[in-house]
Image (cartoon, rainbow over all chains, first blue to last red; front, side, top):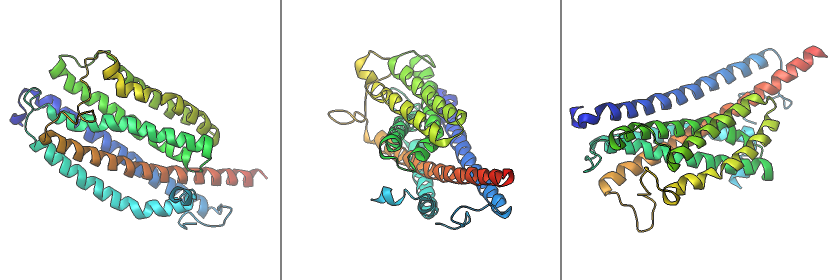
Length: 60
Length: 243
């Protein structure tokens, strides 16, 4: 870390900030996917289906 | 032809299920190589070790503009070609673009303090990128404010195309005005002014972040399609209860 000299704080804060924001984006997208999947399954289990009659797990 | 085939949301979901694991792996690999190259790159003779901030600042700055261009093409897809996934693509890209723009501003600011002696300067480049960030936030707010996705899509498409005027302003701001921000040093007439020792990690990180965008964008589009299916089923359920 001392190799970064007097700029250590600026450099590590920059990389840390990028890591936090990217991890946050990934987590938000993964959690959103799970939420939508769970809601689709709940609706289908309650008897509501698409007009095509296919479930969320069927491709087309 | 390929885009026309993917116009079917179900086909698009099957496509994302196939490609997302490969894209995620390629992204992780490129970013790992890029990080290694960035941390082992030599210090710059003027910037010292702060040149390492450039390896994350520049790709994020490029992507902040690239994502808006993707959204602008999607806006045309909504208004002109009526592609069924165009507004899905635009809506899914906005939070990712906003994040890249925030990171470009924040890392630029953290580089500016030791190099320029200030975190912020109201010069043309910094101000136009701040405006881009605010435009991303307004688009996200617009999509949240209008409940009907198709109505929100048309309004958002117009706002996106108007906002696209800012992209050339950002790009050429360092040439049109006298700015504290340095001029173009990579994509310029006569070739880059950077040494290979800096260009290689910069391009590796740029490819890594671009792959990250493609991966997150496809995943967010998949989520948006599922959200619309949920909305449709909820409306059908509500109709069934009321009749």
